[in-house]
Image (cartoon, rainbow over all chains, first blue to last red; front, side, top):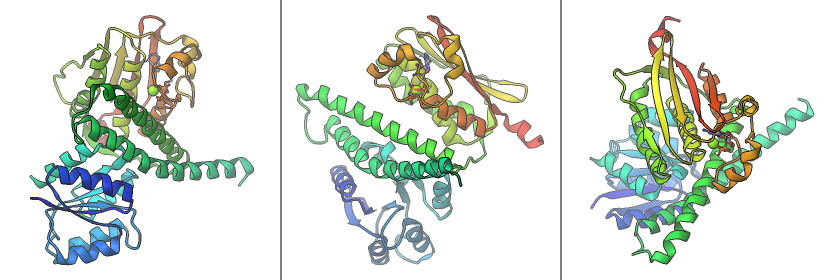
Length: 122
Length: 243
Ligand SMILES: Nc1ncnc2c1ncn2[C@@H]1O[C@H](COP(=O)(O)OP(=O)(O)OP(=O)(O)O)[C@@H](O)[C@H]1O
Ligand SMILES: [Mg+2]
């Protein structure tokens, strides 16, 4: 079973996406802020990470940056950035920091999000 | 800063925040409806299919409006950054065709995309241009009741020309002049527009702002009752380098 870490601070969306991902056979672990995310990432292994950019405490860019230079189990695993913004500057910045894909939440349905995650895990 | 400017800055900031805080709950509504319709919560009783589809359409329409407001406020604040990448228009069109073909099919319109003999490379901002092409196709499909919608690309000396033509109701000469302005909707069509679940008259305004930022031109040729043809140009990649 593929293990995913969802880093997202909006509980409405956490609930929706974790429901969908569990239905699709993912094992879902979730955290609500960047600080918690870093703690989880340090100790656990995941197949893929879903990362929101606007997060309390430590933002998504910083989480991504720290992860990629770390020697943690997930340092090289695919990270799909998940944001409300969709501004090109953010997309470029996230990609430069090592994001594998960039999704704008409102533009995609949960089905499409699952599809994008599977694409990255191929 | 004069009063007018201050006000417009405040308005844009407000729009930015509103759009941001509206999009999250909207994505939840859109998401759950989509999951229901695709059977994630069990079989959908026939009686519920219609209302659920209507919720899906309504939430998509709202997201579209929020996105338009957000784009406009960014462009007007000068916050939008246009990037310039070498892009193969032909392959971009392929992915759009897939997405928009479904809409045309729903209205029983023929959707024609003549095969290109060679690739057309342009220098442009792919996301923004994608949005413009979607806007034009969305209009052509919305304002055409029968016949076809055609998407063509050609290169002409220094520029690539992309056109979307339809066999719809057409646009009067007077309206053609105003079409690319903010909030302009053809007055006679307003009622029909609203009935069709269309927006606010922002699509073409946004498209013009984007195309101008991408060093292109956008225009329309149309005859009432016969149909319309919207076209825009973009600099070809080869010429761009020489500039
Ligand atoms: N292909 C077309 N055929 C006929 N009329 C058109 C066509 N495209 C646009 N129009 C007219 O021009 C108006 C402005 O179009 P525009 O795309 O800017 O706004 P809209 O479609 O009304 O709303 P939205 O903001 O959702 O795009 C439309 O309301 C419609 O009356
Ligand atoms: Mg439109």
